[in-house]
Length: 259
Picture 1 (tube, rainbow, N blue to C red):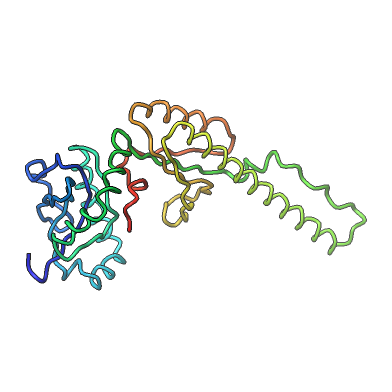
Picture 2 (cartoon, rainbow, N blue to C red):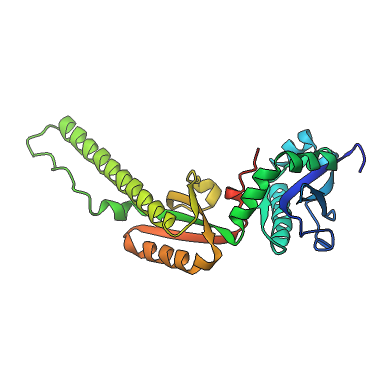
């Protein structure tokens, strides 16, 4: 490494993973990844040039969607390769250190935390569940307000119609929120842990559907069939609501090491 290089951190895993297991795996800069060991833990890292991955150029590059997508795929590919060797705590994209010694210091200082979290995710994987709603279908069961009588003036009739429309929309939103709570509670019953995420803007998802729920769950590998079966059941129970299941993923949401 030189002063123009930095260290990109991909994941933290157990002491069983070494350079031999990582042979042939390349990272975000096409660099060979390697193992940095301390305190019985292994950090999987790669040397990257600060001209592209330093703070200022990285900020510019993260605004380039093509660059971001390619870098995210390369990062995830390394995490997936490490996961095939054993349990791993994946790092979020763009976690950088100046040198290997600082990575070793991280492993030393947070050894107990990392060790406990590795034990927690062993034999488990992350799954995502999103729910989309058809507002028209949800509105079908709503009780409409009485229509304005024929004696009402035009202004009064408009206000009454407008109030009815707002009330109907509020009913649909309350129903969607209640469905989201029910779905999350049911899924937690089949998972080790779960988190509700902010629903995603349709511009980012590429879908015009109304997302009412976005959750991620840590599931025992031996209970995956139970979990996925429950998602299928929930998908059929609520007219107008469709569930989408994704996974399995490395446990990004449950690594607890973003800091």
